[in-house]
Length: 180
Length: 285
Image (cartoon, rainbow over all chains, first blue to last red; front, side):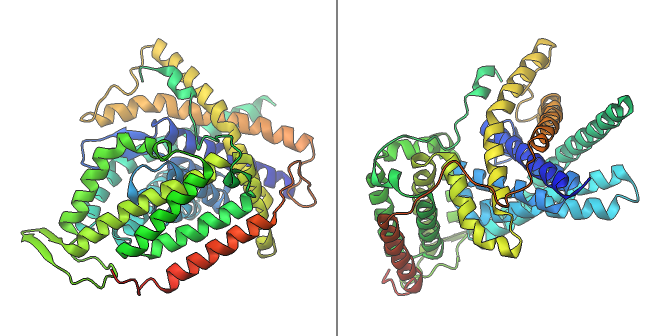
């Protein structure tokens, strides 16, 4: 695989995964209703995690950026109409997920996937809520409650999706390779 | 998930054709103006500054010929949530760091509930800021075709190319994402119908059995990702076959032109933004 080959792959993967992030937000499919005051757990950050795992930190970061920009433009509550809350934290989702994946990949592929999905989700939850507190939209106590009640289901769902998608895709790729 | 066709009709920042001055502005100028004004908005917490900025934004939306009702139409479903959040902000955030020359009055202190005048100011200012940002975002997306915004962004990132920022690639990622949204939406609709015809009950778990909802969602989400990757592979082959080799030396069909009116608009907004940021602590109330 030479340089431009990799470049095309990165650009296209980032574009497609960013499209899924936008789609999940626009169709409300990315929001899972949960019985807490804030209403919904999200899986919109999962494409950024997948991008980070599959194509590295730059792709993960760009997908997070696109996701952030669209969540900023589509926001209907004041907190997410603030670029510091909506855009900035999202850039780091794919980067931390990639770091976790690379650190653990040699140990065990599945463990690496599980941990990086959890780390990516936590990055989103902690940084967004941290920014919300810092910018004065939420009291620290409220943010902590939201973080725990949302963070946990979000981590579980993100882990399931990431493991299912990556193992299915790698399985498919292997099968196709064998046929060729 | 009653209405499958809903999935196909998504509008992200619908472009509204028009011939106002704002429509005719160069996308680069528009992005600059919106960034400058957003910066001024985010640092100002006094009542007066926010009233002035709100007036300025209302003037801008007027100049663009877009009705305020249209801009705020998306907010209505979220209104109960906004009110709940604002009340929480008011009740538990008694001592925020807002710049104000007014004396802080404590209205109520009872257990964890702590309501002060500066808490009230924080709530009112964030609501005003929210309306301002809705207007600014709409100036970008309602008066400019999305592709032009992406080109504008690319041109503005170009100077950072020396620092290793791949401007053309980032803009291409944006355009690809926008092009793929309707394609994947159609695929999602097909998937939803296919799974429903096999008895899947998507989105039926309800709030209290979110675990069931999440599991039901997996039969849509996982195939959606796999389909997207398959399409990505096809596009990679297509682009390589056409010898795409990154942004270097590439020319574009759409050429953006900056006029003197754009320059004046940027200058005025830059002066206003600097003024608002510089004097943010000197507003009387």
